[in-house]
Every structure is written in structure tokens, then in C-alpha cells.
Length: 129
Image 1 (spheres, rainbow, N blue to C red):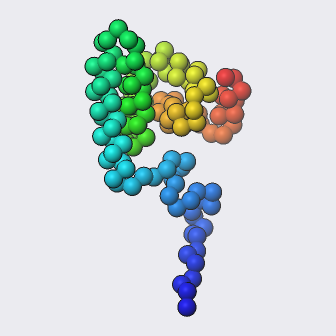
Image 2 (image 1 turned 30 degrees about the vertical axis):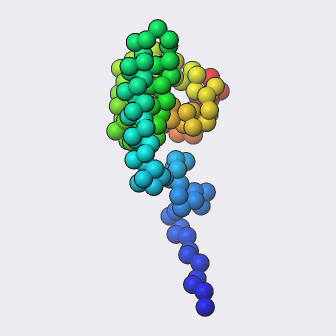
Image 3 (image 1 turned 90 degrees about the horizontal axis):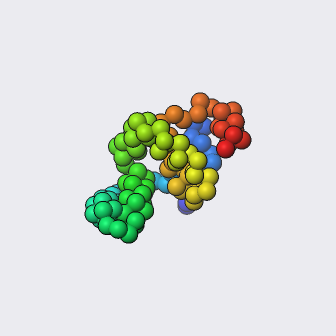
């Protein structure tokens, strides 16, 4: 005799699978540690390479911050703070978000220091861009 299929609770959103929360995939603890380690190493390498004449350090640091922010709320909060203190950086990130891959675009949205209030505001913001 087989066990009955698990019933979904009425409070759980139906569009999310069990492994997803809010559009962000939830990774296992080992994968999370691997991403945090690789992101930390890339951040150190990016800072070292940044001072070299070849401008690859910026791209390496950006990739490292993406990896770290995808796994750490503390890093996302820090990025929000930097974007709040540097309006030109925030404006540049908002301006180029629609040209970037979907994951990066979502990360820029997740670290926005001034998120829109509701769906109507997001639509107006998308039309303005």
C-alpha cells in the first residue's frame, strides 16, 4: 500500500516548488559553503588584480560579490548600504540591469536600497527605463 501524496497547505504559494523560496533557489549546505569559499577567494584575487594595468579586477570582484550575495544576507545588506551611500553607483546599476543576465538582474533588484512599493510602482519603473 502506498503512502498518500503530501497535501499542499493553503498558505504555501503554488507557483514555488519545494526547493525554491521567493524566486531564489535554496542550495544545500555543502554547495553554500563551496559558493561562499569560491566567492571569498575570487574577491581576494580580484582586489589583487585590480591594481594591475589590465582591468580584470573589476570583473572578478563583481563575480565574487554576485556569488557571495547569492548566499549571504549579510553581503546583500552591505551592498545595499554601499548603493545607498553612492547614488551614482546605484544609478549605474539600475541603468544596466536590463542588459544583464536574469540572475544578475535579480541580484541588482534584491540589493536595491530603495525598492518600489508595489506592483504598480514596478510597472511604472519598468516603463520609465
